[in-house]
Image 1 (cartoon, helix red, strand yellow):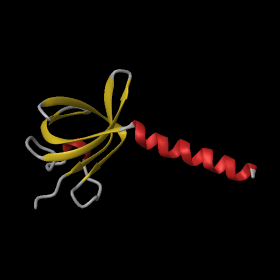
Image 2 (cartoon, one colour):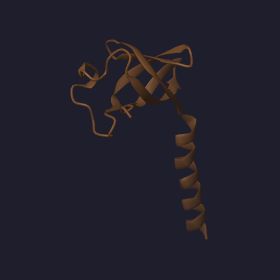
Image 3 (cartoon, one colour):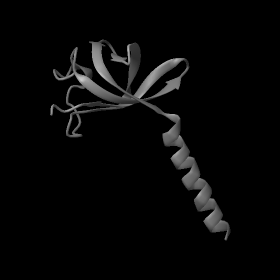
Image 4 (cartoon, one colour):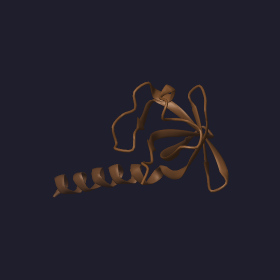
Length: 100
């Protein structure tokens, strides 16, 4: 019974971690040194890009060259998952939205 309780608490902690992050969908305004500015719903978000940040193409494959990838440019649509840390928005994942 104790094992079941411990597993349930562990799952709750894992699931709660995903809820704490935020997601936005918008267009790239600019690409800088470790910063990706995305405009979503009329507001600019300066997303800090860390070493752990996953940069993905529309099909989910990792983008080579990080922020220097030619597909990460002004006007491209992206979805981004981020967390607020020390007053900054730190991206955990940025994915290009595919053309339909």
